[in-house]
Length: 364
Image (cartoon, rainbow, N blue to C red):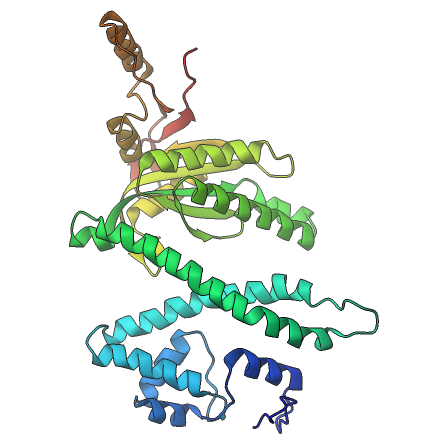
């Protein structure tokens, strides 16, 4: 299999010439190696090279000559980190997998949504094929620079959170507020709405949620169509995000109702995702939350009370206000209110006592 110097693409296997030209443009190198040759050139075993390749999300290609110098360099870098003792072999595979999964989703989005729109033929008679190559040629360096910039920014933010952890254990198993936001009646909507309308609704929901989570200091963990998972180090931040989501969606007539569940506790983080009982509890609270309402667990309620973001009860708030007035001091102010709900059994987690979280009306 070869690609000539002009990039026209002469392929014995019948591959599309434009696809080959685009691949050569994007990768910046010609196909030269079989997997065996690439592994040998990188100085790694075929077995390890295959593990890295699969972890990055690429299919087995047998002994086709489809790999480039860039593939060899990537293998050499990963194996070099292992040889230097900076990463274990298992961790190097995790690096390959996390990077592959993240960038695969980004690449699919860019092609499906972004590039597809840009390559609409600008003039009658022109084909998409004639437009695609020059557009990619222009965009590629800019998108690459932007990707590296965002990655460095995210890396700096994540590193900052880690070094502020109280101890080594907290770097992996951390205490976080975890929130799920779920669109009500989404399954019914899928039966009533056209696919394009449904896609637009999901995109609007995910975009709104992502913007609100970021703006108020949380971290978007993942989106699942009708559901968003986010986390925050601070309970007050997580509470503000939840109520903002409810308020924003309620003001949009095109959006279904929303329900949110939040729990606070130890969370295990892996490859950008979060796991553990706290996450499961937040999910269960979401499933039992009333429409356009936020339910939180006892640990989250206690954290808001401890930080002075919410009173333990309205009676306590009234007592504190009266005492402050008697002393000629300013009464404490609270952003949130908590109302205990009926205890109930939750599948897999035993009996829990949810609390209804609302925004506390300020005294005039």
